[in-house]
Length: 234
Length: 250
Image 1 (tube, helix red, strand yellow):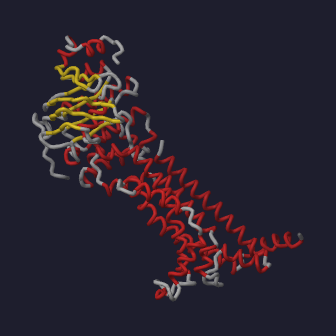
Image 2: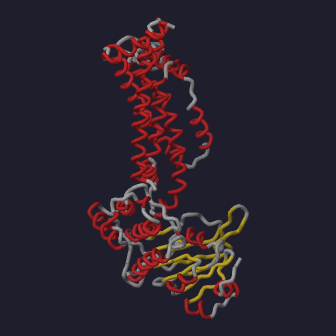
Image 3: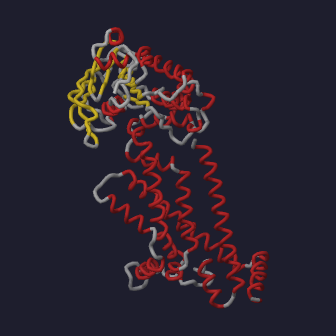
């Protein structure tokens, strides 16, 4: 296992020296995933909240559907989006395949997670708030806004779960992004590629960065959540 | 601010009388409110008294329009208890439901929901905080207040919107005597200012302190509806006599 030890050493060197290739991949990864999660939150949170508060026939079925979409297989989503974006597909004219924009495919994977978790959080809170908000004659739209705002500390967890899914995902981004150097190569696809090339040092270094990002983001969000809970809750 | 048909500080309220006819509420196959007929006139402090499980809280929720009755009719001066009627009412719950925001923001929220403009909201919030003795806690998270302070905030929030009718569901049942006194003083002041008070309680002492008239509920029916002095001196129903004598009324 001489290679293994050497790989660790080299990985450390790459990290310390601020290797350009490494930095580029990390920055692109963060941009793409942040974009995908922001978009997924903008769609998933209102959707989840409406699902929590509204009463209509078929609601229960929709809840089950959204919950099961949390487990969407990324490669299948990647394939479907690939077919849509390919030249023969309905969105082919946009010429988005193998561009960073296409990698917003992550949004498709993250939105159900944000929506399903939001639905649960908001439903619980509505059970507590419902009569008080009725008593205050709060309208439907304002009610959803109120619940989302007051659930902010718990919703951070939903966003975090979405980010975790997005940043760790390989299958979908490699299909629609193509893992093109300097364009669509993100941390996970780079790790897959470098490992298969035998370039374990870069793969390991990227792995460390990915882990570190996961820990830092979780820690920061955890701290933020704690502060919000301290400010707003009993 | 919304244009509201109020004549506060006067004798006549646009929401009264409240007329309830043959009100029935069933849940899970049980008849919890069993044919209530009641008229509440303007200008009085009504106490709805009764043992636990007699349907007091349920009755309050029904007349506030928070839950729909199984059958029967509720009319506030001819109008059903909907959103429009609720804009002229406020309710304080047994367990205060405070928003996960600051003390001041809780009052501001209620005012905004009732259409007060920004300047009016700021002035009114400050005034209510002072009246409730909470001004030093204005920026504190509401949910970190003590039980008594939380209920005082809930009451201040309810009164902030200048309701014609204030509905109170056992507002002091989980409070110590000191906290109870401060809540009762706030309610008494509101009553003096012309707010119509409907107070639900199972506390006989509180009923004596507050009631102009008593509606005694027992097993989802009105066992007695009488002026306070009549009710406490010569209760007409067996259930009320037992209850006032401190016996366990089931």
